Length: 84
Image (cartoon, rainbow, N blue to C red; front, top):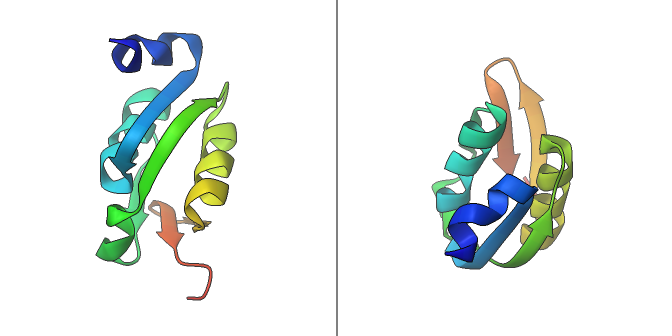
């Protein structure tokens, strides 16, 4: 239950959650369109509780925790591996 209500308090709770399941939260909570440069990035998992008042705060946490780079494009955000 905590996972389903935490967003109301700007808290995001993940328990071995694949990135592909996190992306809809960015759409639902912040209206962001996010694409993965490589579908394999969607398999990276996230565990922990993150506080984020803004989309930028959550994106920064995701970038650090999952070792992904976030680039802005004409159609939204693109997540890539830092070595790409």
